[in-house]
Image (cartoon, rainbow, N blue to C red; front, side, top):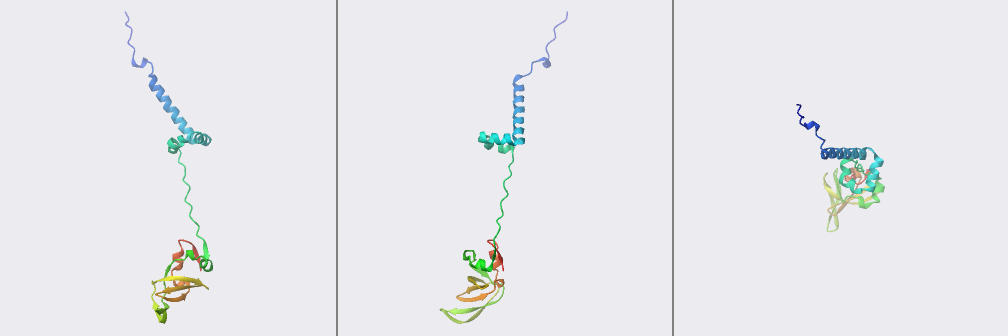
Length: 160
């Protein structure tokens, strides 16, 4: 007599839960690929379901941040710069020795020779020269005798 064979595991019906889970995962992957690759679909999803872009879409599509714009500094002549006192530095540093009037109690008593590297106040710009003040006394110098161009550089390009 032939005995009926026992069913093997390979004869068992497929696990419906595992098949359904696999199918859902496959559909999610395909939907993600379509979202990434098909721009009109992505735009439609983003406009109709903005929550999707916020919660999921930004992980799928890397959008380039716009490159920061580098401000173009205005190029000014000394005359143009002179007309904009708001751009002037309060002080400049001397590059050469400069003779300033020596003033004591509002009275001129002679001159004083001021060394390179000394900070002096920029008071006026006129006729291509800088009006400087040091300890109450003044002097007029050409801009090249100071570090004016270097100090203005973050705000504008100064063409002398």
